[in-house]
Image (cartoon, rainbow over all chains, first blue to last red):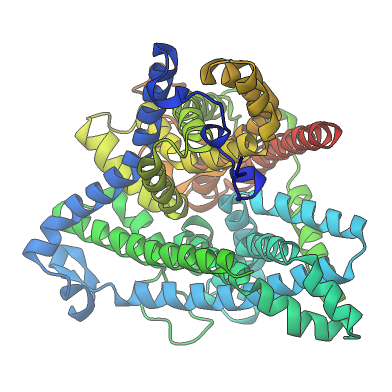
Length: 308
Length: 264
C-alpha cells in the first residue's frame, strides 16, 4: 500500500486509507457545521472587501470632480478655498517613516542577532518578554510620554520642540519591538544544520552571522522590516502629538511637520463634502501603499519558504 | 551588541520613570465619576470603554472562531475559499487603524446610520481585532497534534464531535491567550475609534450612545485640555496596568499550552 509522501502535518484526514469522506457528504450535523464555518470565513473575508469598497466609494466624488492630480499641484492645503495640496503631509509622512524604519531596522536586527547568537538563554527570554510588553503599549501612551518628556527637552535646545526628529524617535521606539521580535523569529527559523555546519568548518561567530545567518534569514528579515514599515505608515496618534502638526514642508529635521495619517485624524472631525472626500482619498492612498507593501511581503514570504 | 541590550533596557527604565512621575492621585481616579475633565475620576470612561470592547468581542469571537476553525480544520475541503479568506485577512491585519476609522465612519456611522455610538465603535473594533484573533486561534488549532484527530476518526466520531469534545478543549489555552492579546490590542486602539465612538463623557445609557474610550481620553487630556496632563498620566497608568495584567494572563496561558504539549 503506497504511503502518502508529504510531511506528517500535512496529512489530511481524507488521505488516510479507510476514512470515510464525512466532510462533504456526511450527516446533516457536519454539513451544518461546515456551512456555519463557511459563513464565518466569508464574513471575515467580506470585511476587507467592504473596507476597500467604502474607502473607494467615499473618495470617488473627489476623484471625479476635482481629480487626483490636484492633490499634488495645488498651491497649498486650504480646503475652504478649494485647495487640496497633500504634498507637505506626504513629505512629512515620508521623512518620519523612512527615518524611523531605517533606524529601527538596524537596531532591531542588531538586537535580534544579539539575542539569537550571543545571549545566554535566560537573558534571551527576558529580552523577548520585555519586547513583547513594549510592543503592547498603546501609541497614546508613547505620545503622552513624548509630549511631556521629550518635547520640553528639545524645546530647551531648539525652540519649537515639536519636530520631525521627535517623530522619528517616537516611531522608532514604537516599531522597534516588532521588528526585533520578527527578526528574532527569522533567526530562530534558520535550520540548525547551516549554523552548525559553518561552525564545524571553523568559522568565527561573526563570520557565521554575516555569511550564513543573515542570508538565510533574509526573507524573514525583509518581512520584519516591511511590517515595521506598514506599522510606521499607519501610526497616527503618537506622531501627531510630538510633531506639531503644522502644514508645511519641513525644511530641516528640527522643523515641525504633519504626517498624512495625523492629517486625516485631525481634520476629519469637521470636514464636509469635498474636504471629506479628499481626506478619504488620503486614507485610500495610505491603504494602497500599505496593501502594496503587504502583498510584497507575502511574496517574499512565499519565496523564502520554498527556499530550503 | 551589548549596546543594544543596554539601549533598550534604558528605554524600559525611562518608560517606567514617566509612569511613576505622575503617580499622584491614583486612588482618586479609581471610581468617582467625572466632573470637568481636569478633575474627578474616570468611571464613566471605564464603563464606556468596557462596553465598546465587550461589544467588539461578542461580535468578533464567534466569527473569528468559526473562520479559524474553517481555516485550520477544513482547509483542504474548500480550498479556494480558504485561500481568499486568508489573503484578505492578511491584508486586513496590516491596514492602519485610521483607515479602519474612516471605514467605520462611512459604513457603521453613516450607511447604517448609527452615528457616533458604542455600536459603531464596537463594530469597527471587532473588524480590527478579527485578523489577529483568527490568526492566533488558527495557530493554536494547528498546534493540536494530528494524532488526536486521527484517533477520533478511527473511532468513527464525526468531525463535529471530534471538534467539540477533543480539538477545541485541547487548543483552548492557546485560543484564550490569543483572545487576551486581542483584548489588549483593542484597549490600546485609539485612531479607529476617533470617528466612530465619539467622545461623550457621561455614562452611556444605550448602545446608541456615544462613549469615550480610555485611550482617546488620554489623548484628549494630553492635547486639548490645558492642565489635564496629570489626569492623562494617571489614566495612562491605569491603561498600562490593565494591559500588563492581560499580557501576564496571556503568558501564563501560553506556558500552560507549552507544558501540555510537551507533556503529551
